Image 1: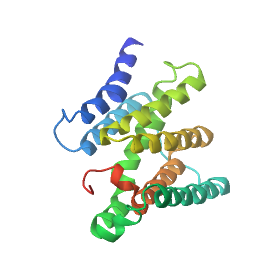
Image 2: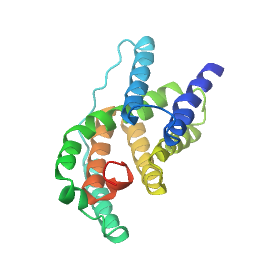
Image 3: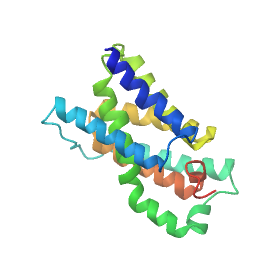
Image 4: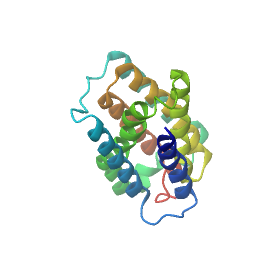
Length: 201
């Protein structure tokens, strides 16, 4: 149990903090990928029959995606009008790269580590299901301190609530990955992506 607490601290506290302080070389995506590979190796070692298949999106999820996406654009327009739609307008090539690769190189590792791996691996550390859920939301939000602004942390907290609840309800990775990808694309398209990367600053 002590080793599992140490693993939890290293992955979900120390790593984001080191990235926030710029004490590690290479891109943040390198460490996200390494964390995902580590999580996959642990799961495969314990559950060799592991799969990542999922069910199609339900009507309720599809409706939530529409409402949340609309809210993202409205929030961007009202709160940060100078950034609204600036990424596709001013950084079209980067925006297209985000559309193509963001779901694979960013969202999929995040959801694998913070949903599939987290709820399976650390349920023993948080026997109370409410505490487990709250810890997952908190750690997902905390991970985004690496971007150095509270907007990213706040939006990630809201996203963490949606993604954690969706995963626990479906028990599947695929629907949550799709939902997370669409929200992320909406964030970058609306202009809020400035808070999630230094490339567009």
